[in-house]
Length: 188
Image (cartoon, rainbow, N blue to C red; front, side):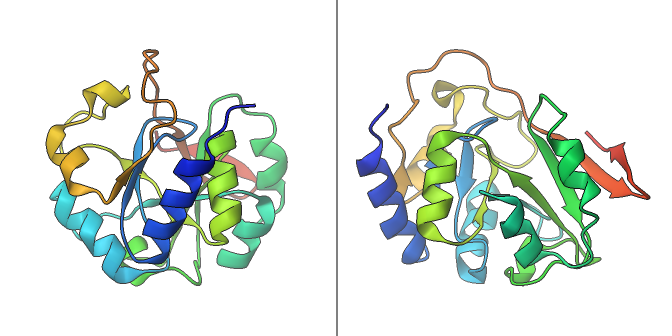
């Protein structure tokens, strides 16, 4: 088993204090913060020079986490997610318990159950959802490896996870779907 205890402890300290982290996910590297902390989300918006009306992806560890943060969830979506091979983010209507600047204008939120061991451990220890937005300046291409991440981003976060920095395989962003009438509608 890989020991990422120091990274987890450092991330928890930063997240609990309203800071932002740069971390590997089950897809591309992400910039993250406490998804319930509006001021922390504002730090990410400023760092990325991101339009404020653009919503965020949030990572959770379990189906139960989704049920705590979205109402009227069609449970069939969980069966569907078990059949997909690519990490898939789902847009859920009627989000609850998030910072307002996480949500889309219609009150929906994009959530992915993260299958990465490091992320799941971090989320479970933090006991809250974590923002996961691509580690790039808004409008620029997403970094596919740690080494591709812009220096401005690296200098603008409060902690950079050491785990998986040396990976050279290009990562891919998740699929994004909306679940309507028992069927996935692919948006990306």
